[in-house]
Length: 251
Image (cartoon, rainbow, N blue to C red; front, side, top):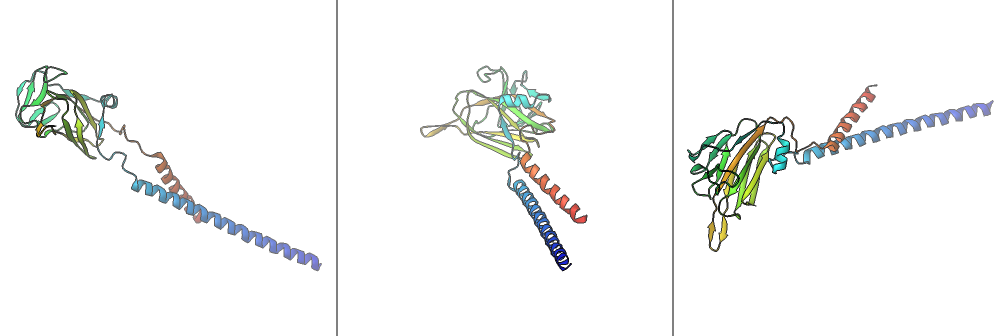
């Protein structure tokens, strides 16, 4: 009887130790889960905090990208056909305003290699030329720039948009250049500064012209920048885990 009682007591003691040990492991496991989820949440928030914005500034598009990303949108094109002559400064046309010194629309094949009508500036080529007052909601802007006399003048280009400013420096222009830009929050202005070519002790500036000014907008989703699914998944996992722990505590 004493052996049976002793055995029962020992058995009861082992059960108590097993219960305590199991509870200890469960607590340790819960603490580990909580720590892991908190770490995952911290990492996700850190990634969102320190990762650069997916669309920090306007971006440059080549002709293929511009065509593909404006497909299905209404694209307005100004080709300056039939409006030749000196224009007021600034000069407003179908889809924007040009500010220079002496805007002029010319109908010469030598000045406009791609057509017989283009927008030039009869003033000093080393001064900044700016396109602004674009139609409301303009997200895409493009133009063809033609060099009239030389092909080695570098340009500084400034694109100001709702999401920031894109600065392109020292871009060497060829005889005919496509220049396209995109900003999901809207493009406000595009400026060109001819830096000229250094020849001996002097700087020579080529005249240049613009043609086929294109604008488009109405895009609901940014086609270039995509969200980072890994970061968003980590954040979602962390929030879900913390929610589960709260429900478990409440139960």
